[in-house]
Length: 310
Image (tube, rainbow, N blue to C red; front, side):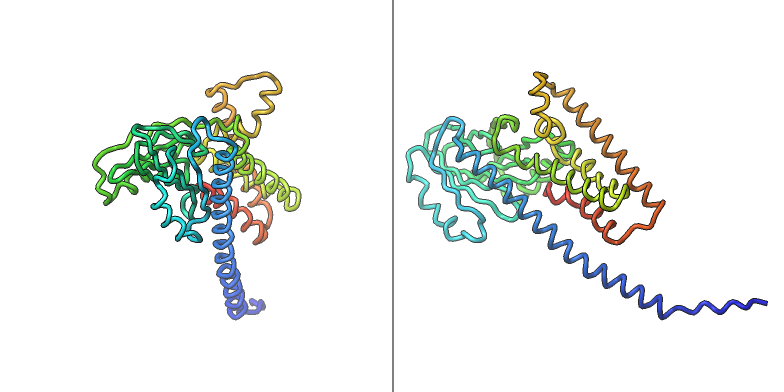
């Protein structure tokens, strides 16, 4: 004879389910707002280091630069720059950024032939006349003049070629492009730049400190957050992000010049270590109960590389 009481807890389960749904519905908008804030701060950081690099001193030619700032707040100034193209015999360059591009430059080359100008992250050859240089996320830029355009990639990420092909089709769609501009350029070295390496230092060391603090506070389950670095290995220039910028001073102090091949090997080895830490962290998930905030923290670090890339 079965004397166990019947299992009747539908009301409790219903309340619990609604409570979980409410927590999820309240968390997702907050996460979205927080990630959008990080996206804006990342664009502002890139714009700032580009502007500081130019203010430190252009590479060899010094046209007149005017830095406008965040374009949605300065639409009238951007519209007025059309009147100032011939105000300087050496040319004029107006720079600003928006919510989708870390930098946009309106360049007026008043010479009669192509000339190189310093745009912070690189030195670019622009044709005579008025040109627009737009920096896209993922180290891609477009050079546009009239109905001509050139889309170039100046990074070294594994997904870079796919990304630049997508942007080339997007930028050229419906614009009546008839010819390609030369768009020759020289990329500045991050190791020798005072400002351009700052984002890479933040991308590498700040999440590392946060993840280590999470491991100390919450245990080895937070090792799963190291998946952030696995994604960054494919999305960004792994040699600069993992080797040249964060550890370049170590090799320099040892009088050791690391080659491109050995740099990529070191970066791949470090990525494998991060992958092992990630697997170890998820393995601990099956051994103990994970709190909601631990899951949310890991989700944040999984989404963070995409926010930093775009």
